[in-house]
View (cartoon, rainbow, N blue to C red):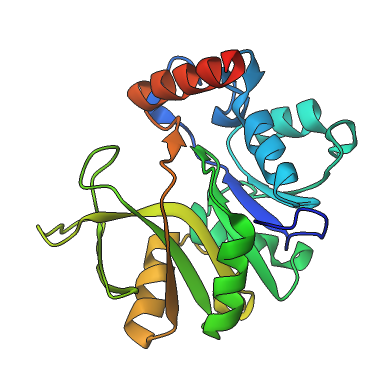
Length: 241
């Protein structure tokens, strides 16, 4: 069982996307503020992270990011410390946004996507990352194409192939959406340059410096109307249960 009394390493939430697939719902609010069973989606994420021992979260924001800051402030009302890193006039992509946030981050940290609810054991992931000695770690989930398109070939505890564009039948797992990294992975990137986190994962895989950890709890996401409906149903059912 996880020990929730000690502090989890800081978490970066990538909440800067334009959420085009959810329009018109996101014409005036960012995805993080979309109502899911009576609360903004980000509220659900923060409650989950707090339960697992997170005390500090950095929100990498872009599209309508000021609205997120106005709503959640410094996080004191939720009992968690929130800091904000803004993309600026040009959207930086998921990798570039992490590079932008580095002044707020320590040597090791988690990264998760702003549209994903990931009810896994965060401490077990952190311990696996620490023991691996690698520069990065990707969590994977045996998806078999059920909840999203599988994009990871995972065998004997390691990632054999990862590709979001060119899938193969051997890919039965999916990138779960939670990563752990050394800050030097992103310190090497030019400041202000657009970069995708998927490319960072690919580079680490090719270098042999990407660890993997398999989780078994299904994920929920609000990146699509279908995903949003599933997430709302999950939280409504959870509340009744």
